[in-house]
Length: 256
Image 1 (cartoon, rainbow, N blue to C red):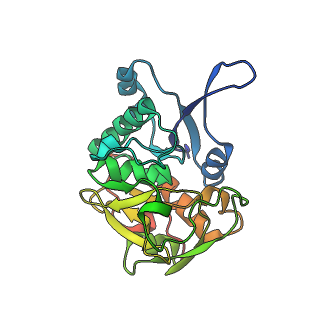
Image 2 (image 1 turned 90 degrees about the vertical axis):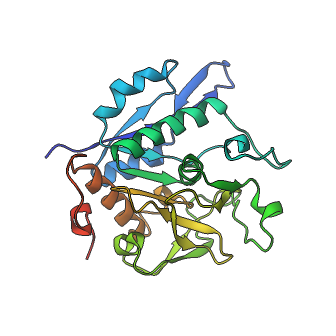
């Protein structure tokens, strides 16, 4: 069986040793997809976006990874003093990828920033900084802790696709973000919440497979098998031709 090709948009950063710019992604995303049976393909920020018309029809799925903040102008707000680093080029590039995925039914999984860019692409908004804009929030920006450290639980909505894939109503999560979904976008269904009520899981039911998580399961799937189920379901959805409907959760690797 041919394994599905899954695109991962790259970030751009500067090598401090020689000031040269690099395109890349964290290895953990690659390893999580590979462990689930997918073949990751890194997508650089193309200088000519029209190149996407040649590239995207060749991938079977899209993983939107974590990363830096998103420009608030994209959801109609001025920058907050606690807004972090942004990259307008990356924002526009990923928005173009999401638009193509929506229009063509490409299975998509968003992680952290990936969940946020999906929501923004669908007209939603974000809390630019949870500590200052979301009173009573738990500590979500745990960048000083090991990336696989469990810091809170997520309640999973009964009857949601996420519950059927994960197989549980509560799941352990790490937390490495300071932004989050404020107003859900068009067609967005929030299917999981942190203890403070912040959106942690979401899905777009009208799409074949378009789901997202605010935590980082790529750091957890080896120790928390429930997260391995999400990657398995995503890769299984990517294995089904786009023109063929996904008729049941069994088709996308539901683990009984």
